[in-house]
Structures are given as structure tokens and as C-alpha cells.
Length: 375
Image (cartoon, rainbow, N blue to C red):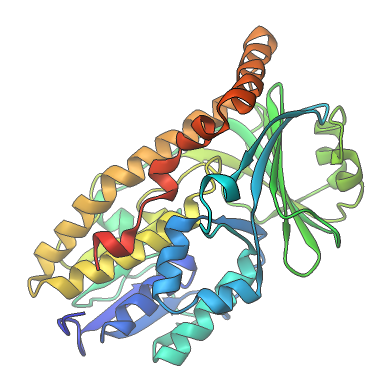
């Protein structure tokens, strides 16, 4: 830390994962940070998310590791299974990356850890703020999500397109779960599930459909619709779905990575900069990476415009690559007919002959260290 940010005012729009992590990272380097949140309280009803080592390196560097560990579970493996419940391949994360920190956490618990850390560090959090009219600030950071006003101020109006996929989110009780993520792949649909601390299980189920749903994931739905869409799935899935009493549904829309991330006075990060489909479990992780890199770049140079330009240049290529990987996984999970049989057979064979090779495809995501890149 150079002290370059000491006492510099920074205004952050949005009090989610991106905004709060950025607030902590900037405050740790001496900035005077205000977070403007339109909700009357910092709260996250959400569901689960996966924190991979690339994000955990940042959270550990910010001193949040013990607090995260206390409210999360380790993720030991990812099991890919077909719709019947039969194993396709088990990816042993512990064996491939000994000591790497993969954590499974409820989004609400992560928000609580971040809010407490921000408040303890001296970040000013202003609730109930109308953020449609952006404040005139020396440095304005847009962490205001999918429908970002700061992104629109930098890039103009943009129209996302519906991917033809609808997703449900639910959380159920599960006291004796194995700490691993499971993906059940069927024709035109797939279901992801993993345990959470406190005896809970997170479920995300995605269906290809022409029905248009609202973007965002706060729309309640009838659990019967989820049950019907995945009625043919086997293994533990029927038992899980039978426990679902409340579910939310949302349409999946594809957004382009923002063309312009900053203009010398305003900058965006997280979903405001690079909304991604949820098929690489990297949405929150990328936001956390962004937050560290933004703060480090601002701390490294007295010229704010140059610092923000460096932040954009460092982050945009990686974000675009991860978004593209998520788009590809959306297709791979939903294969049908002969292509599906061939792909699953190849995965089974690869898992037996060279399991490390299957996992190595994503080393570039998980082995990345934002802290080492921008200390």
C-alpha cells in the first residue's frame, strides 16, 4: 500500500458483493468510502454461491477468511451426473489442488460478513438512497448490478437478449450432506446442487424454454412447475424437489461485457461491467477480483484516470473469457441425443484415464491470483 488513497473520497453505488468488497478494499488503503444503497437495509434473500480460490485469495488478503470459514463449507469435489443420477465423472478438487480454498456459502451470509467488515473499517453506508440520479462525485464506482445506472451513463442504453433458458432457485434442509457440488445433466435442462452451512442445500435448476420470464431472480413461482420440469430425473433429485416449499424463477439473459468500464471519474465492476450466466459459478468471484484490482490500481498511481484505465485493461480480457466459458457450459450441460451420449462417454473415459486433465481445463480460472497480480 502506498498511501495514495489516504483520505480520498470514493462513492460506491450499490451495497451487494461487488460494492461492499470494493468498499473494504478501498478503505483498507485509506480512502474515505461511502456506499449508497437504495434498499432500506443491507439484506440478501438469495441462495447459495460458490467461492473458488481466485476469490478466496482476495477475501483472505482482506482479513475475512476466518469469518467466511465460520459461515461456509469446504467444497471437496464436483460430481457430474446424468439425469438418471448415474455418475459421469467426479472431479476431485482436493486432489487436484491440495490446500486450495473452495467454499460453499449462502449469499446472505457473505453479505453479512462483508457489511460487518465494511462498517468496522469505517465505511459509511447510506441506506434508502435513490441511485437513479447519480451523484456528482470525484470518484464514482458503479456496483449497481444488472441494471446499472453507472454503466448506462458510460455506455448508453443496451438491450440484453433472452437465452431461451429459465432457472429456478430454492433452498431446502439437508443435515447430512456431503460437501461437494453436483450437476445433473439432462436433455435441454440441468440441475446444480450443493450443501450450505447450517444444514441447508442450495438448488439451481435450468430449463430450456421459449417462455419469456422477467430478468432478475426475485419472482416467486409454484414449486409444482419445478417438479414437473425435472420429473424424469433420478438419484437424490426427487427427494430434494419434494422438500421444496418456496422457489424463485428468473429468465436468463445474455449481456455483452461493457465496452467502456471507466471515464476517469466513473468506473464499474461486477455485474454492472460483465453480467454472466451462472454456469461457471464465477459471478461473485469476478466481482471480488474486480474490487481488489480496482483498489490496488488506484493505490498504485496518483493519476486517477491512468489508474482506472489500468484497472479496465487488466480486468476486461479475463472477464470476457470467463463469460464466454459460462456461455459454453450452458450448451454442454443440455446436449441431446447422440451428442449427449458421446460427450458423457468421453467424460467418463477421461475421468478414468486422466482425471487431472479434465480439471486442468479450468486452471486458468482457479489458479489466478489477483493479489499477486496487483499487490
